[in-house]
Length: 124
Image (tube, rainbow, N blue to C red; front, side, top):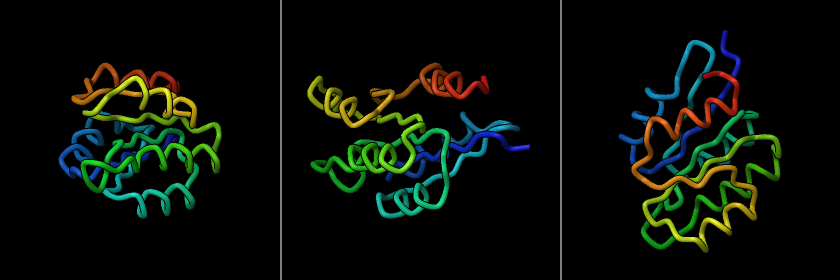
């Protein structure tokens, strides 16, 4: 029986597939989206236990991931949100945490870091 739901949002489909393989378990279902509109639709329709989103979804200068953090926390404050980025900076991390991000992870994200999220969900 599925007891936890995770959403992975990244415009790189290979990352979505890899994260799904690493996170999915008998008691964990993983959905994926490759853009902000699909992510918002999924977050509106489902109460995810965790959302993992890339910071930049539709180009090298946008910060769609921050919008996903904010949107998720407004609808589902208890949802664990992890923001991932290859463009880590202290300012971005502070902004993400101010919006409610629980994790700010730098790419490439390790399996150990993903397991931290599973531990927060009590499934690992």
